[in-house]
Length: 484
Ligand code: ADP
Ligand code: GLC
Image (cartoon, rainbow, N blue to C red):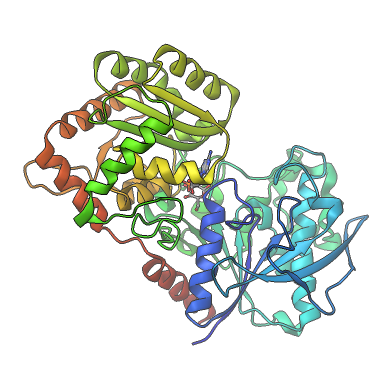
């Protein structure tokens, strides 16, 4: 069955990206489009997006229309473009007053309004195009009011009579909470009773919670994380609402866009490789070590990190374990990331303490992130929680052994290597503490010193397939189930 799917996402790669949501919204759109569905991805036209380079064109009937949120009025226009290197349509929602800012996300007082207005603008765009989506697929807190708006504000419009909603939670750590004094900004009027009353009494409104309460189905980005978020340990205060919706909640592991992330065709690499030409990886590593001014022999194992530097990512586990392991073992490390100043400070200091062996690049750099995947031997992701995680799956493809904690999508995509059976794709540890990470690092370095095991583990990983052809089909199955 050909489906009409309206996808709402606050970021879409390569146009706008702070993390994995961007990769996933773009790749899922491309998958659905190539599978013949009428999918339309709506995303804000941020200042950093170059509309000319995209050849974005204004859509008739969607120019300079007004969107009211509470007492606020904004003027919106919508432009149509194609996701780069594909024919998948992306609808760029333009509102300079809201999206011409220095960063995608802000701590400005109107942050909630930016995305409430965006969500409302998408409904109005559908109405003006007279386009009836069967599926309204919202992502994360930014668009999580979609399902409630559908029910409370648009139910009377026959256009949406057949529309069912899905909320995908990519990161439960960000819920978009704002003060209940802004209640009128929702524009729900007499339907305010539909809001979560306990939260209101406590003085707050939680967008993500309303997505959980009102979506026809809820997914998160791995089966393990779907179970985790129903627990007190991982639910981040939303576990009760999630448990209440239990049967509507499921996990679908993210796919990997192998057009973007595959050493066979990586646009940033001067040479390409696959499991049968793994020698090229060693050549790329040699070039990389020289370019980054490492002072180590190319035979020394190189660890890589590419990450938002946030507490989610388990950086504090490295505070003691990395200096220890670097002091005792032959090991080099390259880190790319930015975020929390205390973590940036830690890596700056580590680089100073181990000159020529640790290189830290503060910032965001697409090209370098691909090089790190290709040139490293190991990749570190000791996350506190990880809904899915993409870099461990990229690493597998690049023959870069992931060291991960057994949580969320890391648990679902990496199997601990067993030297007795020769099965497994990485090093997996359980406990969230320094000793466990140190154990994992040492275990990985021991395996690196045993070339037969290492080659086997690398090969096992490179053979794994996380393509969207598989994972995308699971979304289509779910869409069909909620429509049935
Ligand atoms: P999250 O969404 O929690 O940040 P994921 O592993 O799902 O984690 O996705 C992170 C994505 O962002 C990956 O594509 C990764 O390569 C990219 N990324 C993260 N930090 C940087 C950075 N500093 N420079 C370039 N890419 C980055
Ligand atoms: C999030 C999660 C990450 C996931 C990504 C895309 O930000 O932290 O684990 O892979 O979204 O779904």
